[in-house]
Amino acid sequence: MSKRPLVSLIDDDEWLTAQYVRLLESGGFEARSVTHALDGIDAIDRLRPSVIVLDMFMPGPNGMVLLHEIRSHSDLAQIPIILCTNSASDLDPKSIAAYGVRAILDKTTMKPEDVLTKVRALT
Amino acid sequence: MEEVKEVAVQNGVALLESVPLFITAAHELKSPLALIRQLALTLEDSSCSAEDRNRVARQIVLTSERALRLTTDLTKTVRLENSLFDLEPLNPVSICEEVAEELQPLYRARGRKLRVSPRSRPLLGLANRDLLRRILLGFADNALHYVSGEAEVVVSARSYNQGEMIRLGVRDYGPALPTKVWRRLESSIGTPVMPLHTRPNSSGLGIYIAGQFAEAMHAEIGAIRHQDGATFYVDISASTQTRLL
Image (cartoon, rainbow over all chains, first blue to last red; front, side, top):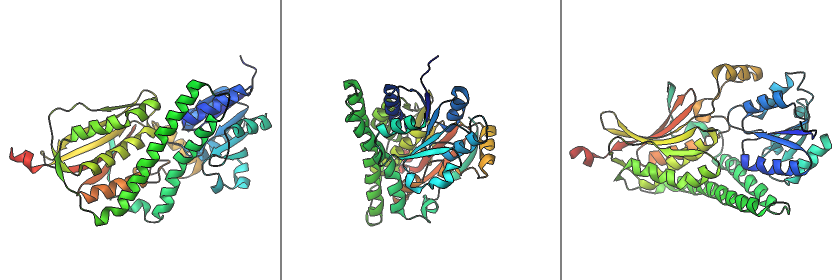
């Protein structure tokens, strides 16, 4: 069993998550990614990650559905969440904070290593 | 596979009537542009291996091509009103094969499968080759996002209505949502399930474009909702030349 902090990435773009996984693992984390929110719920339940990196818009249930689901389970609700989305400018950080969102990354302006920086700050 | 719902898509107009087209288009283009940017930035990372760089460069090219297809389609949509489109007898199965061949590199790079359903007999339909190709390319491109794992996307052509009409369709197998799970999730946020033509994460722009292209050549688009995905299709008339033979 690895002692490295585990990060769950939930994003429908596997090309992007492959790069984030590579970055996070080179930064000392263990990282696992899934491309659907439903798989994300299972992964979070099974892996109990230290941090969740979540996209908002995915096929099937979107990120908001997953945020509701995580929040409804007391044992999962404390896991810090980083939203990583193209639509960051449409989100209200105050209202989204109630769902355990600790940081928002804007894919249109961020650098890939910002994922690593934010994850480090939360672990 | 059980078909649970079929809808006629009224040229996609209703989907976009309340949202200016340019806003929807900008939203749709944001996703591939943001991806290209993120991928390009990873090329600057010195820890990226040569193999990784080659793969990422290929991903950038394929993503650019997707975005360019969308911009070309949008441009063409705007110019439809002033254009006349020649209709010609076409072999729909050949069109399906062309579409599958064009998208194979993208599907392969995404680790997905795209195939053409084997035909039982030759068919000829009356359509504009370019517009028909673009409609199917759009459907198949969209389907890529709704298929996962080993499931494949199937492009097919068949005649119906006693050989009067030809239906070219793209069948995907996602989102694979068990009804029970979907209802539970749905009730947890108190919002209704989105109708088929606005599948989750879809602005409807692709359907709008397909509808416009279909209308320009007197064809119709529609969709069939399955329990494990959907078929988006375009109906064209069978060539009268075929019927005379």
